[in-house]
Image 1 (cartoon, helix red, strand yellow):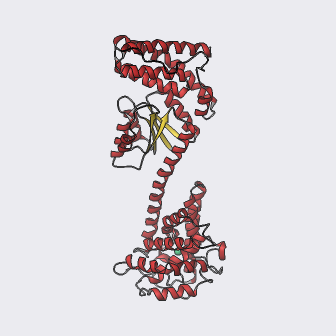
Image 2 (cartoon, rainbow over the protein chains, first blue to last red):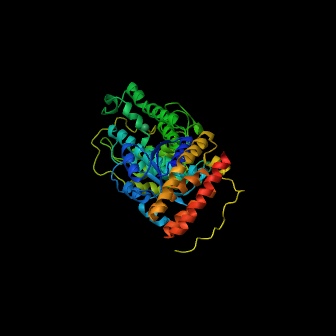
Image 3 (cartoon, each protein chain N blue to C red):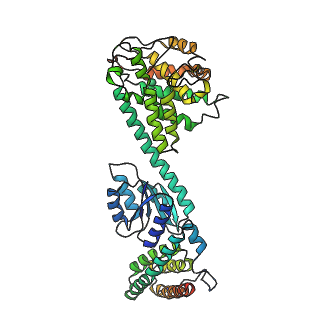
Length: 352
Length: 121
Ligand SMILES: [Fe+2]
């Protein structure tokens, strides 16, 4: 990650540059606010560590300029303040500073504060990337409407209910729920790799076409796995990968692509399966009416222990009222004009 | 013109001229960075000192304060604590409109600087 250091004192700038380089950042040095502002426009620095008092343009003014810039991504600003100076932190915050480090700086403290900044900046780009990817997948998916929005809500409800479950409680914390909420829209991302004549085929698919369609789990899973290998610390990518890869696995081991069974299927995949099927059943398509909640519920309960994890079905029953509320609130307006490539053929409920 | 401020904790001969442990921590144990920083500090200081001297001669308080402030940043980051304290006093004197006091501080600063040069040979 590129970091900009702004300090009019060359010795301090040199030490800051050396320390931040040691910490793995790529550092650009500016010798005052004016210079920093110029360099910010030329490079892609996401974190700025700036001295407060500088000639030409001081740290506060630099902050204000950064905040008033109407394009580009969020820049995290850390201001250096002297321990004894009369710097007004409120004034700094008002100018748009995110954090402060006292001078002479303590490297351990700087490291922690940089880490916080990095986390915030990467969260922003993470959400953006996921949103873009999900939208891309959606544009190729005839199942448009609010499918993605509803499904992520269902996933959240299931996650919250399961977090109180004695077996899964330890596995599900608010972070896990947040990551599932964030990445569940990517579950069918692999559909971008399915040829049009299969993906957009009206009516029933042949066996070969069905096998081809099933590959969307592998394509999506592998794509996200490659991203995860490049960024092993990005735990949300692991959740995204697991969801894409395993949301069509069945609890009894007869699902696809790998025929995983029981708890060999990642929990997020087992949760996604219930949310995805419920939405497919209760949504109106050209060839079928929306199934009322109680019928969809019957089908889900019938699949308990065969298609679905009983614990997730429990969670569904507990959160039933919320499911109904979400379904009603986020109902698609009008009819989908695109035909559904794969019918939901109950009792072997199959979404795609 | 007021009387010179009282030194709260003036440096003594026993005080280290550079707090090497502190600098080492700050540089995350990077000896090369430490060396480069000290070299740059020693290379730059005489020039800055001369500039402060000139600003005192012409009585430019703003300039004294500005240079002293920047020098203080260098000195404190390098771990030259005694020099940093002197620079802080100099900056305060200039900001407080106390030119005579500033001149005193300047002499003390020069003294600290010689002590540092002497100590590191
Ligand atoms: Fe799917």
